[in-house]
Length: 260
Image (cartoon, rainbow, N blue to C red; front, top):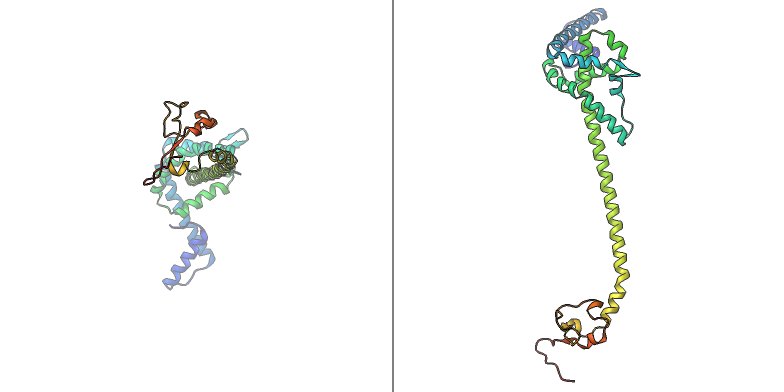
């Protein structure tokens, strides 16, 4: 049966009567037919649930209805998280761990019941509709069916909540990293701009054609052993006038240097 809600069964029954060109019976007759059909379906599911669940699964389902201090296990699982905060998500993870054994049992049992996803959602909604007291008063097989469907649906919902929370916090980390990177880049750029006048002042003291003709520094008497290709900082003699005097500049190819 695709949907066990009485309204859906009534609509399908009336459609069948029209298709078969059968006169529609009275309200009481339709009510009796639908009630009997639903009773037969409940009996079928009750028998299958009893066969599909082992002793441990039945005990775990029963434990949800046991009141511990102020809340039962089912009432605690029903509570929704109000935010993606750490404490809320820690509680979501705790509830998910508590439902993990029942979820595994439901994955094995529900395919044997041969019910649609719509019916699974309907039976799960009954577990939230009835109070803890009402669920205790129902037939054990019926209560187990409702709780089994609820455990399957609620576990998946908790998993989705944790995944959404992870995605939310990852976006926050990415945005914070992007903002920090932009601030550091702006800081480095400003520092570079402050140092640029000093570099220009240093380069201004070199011979006019030093860069174009490729001067070699450190060849004077005060700079023996220096790498002739290396232009150093103040430690290598840029602050010493004799350092510039000792610079020798190579002439461009094809141009001979005229003696002074």
